[in-house]
Image (tube, rainbow, N blue to C red; front, side, top):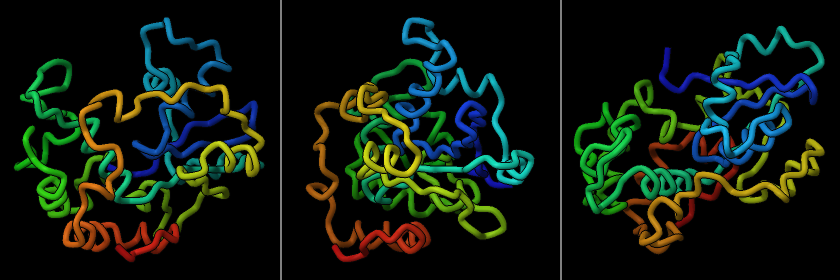
Length: 224
């Protein structure tokens, strides 16, 4: 069993199953659906905890839901990893819930070498040495989080880069009025926003090699 095995949320009212991938707008999408079940921002509970409390299903269990469509959101692998870097590592060394000297121990607890003062290139060098089988969901391959017996199984693949348009066109879901939750810029506003401005070709190539299946499966360009 991998740490990043598929996890799905059953949405009976829409006859959908959402297989979520961290750092791919999952907070926003979960928030949209959670509100339909009575959740609100003032409950003190995140959309993640709301749905986790209701129970998640595996890839295999989707077969029990006849007539349901499955969907997932994918993102450019380097952009996604940079978002993880921005939102989970704090150069000021802050502590707090899940934080140890500026590093999110929940995500990187199994990754020696992740420190608060790493540049993005240094961070990539560390992360790309982590075996895929033990990678945390926040930086694990997207492919392994939505595959069953080696095949990408969701009926609908939504692109993070055109999130609102794809959700509306492919699923009839309008999130245009939904706030963007858990944005990495809000966690670390001093970080440069665009990964391209902090990524050299060597770093990019490391990412392409590590996330090769994601680049191939979802059609992202491998030219720097």
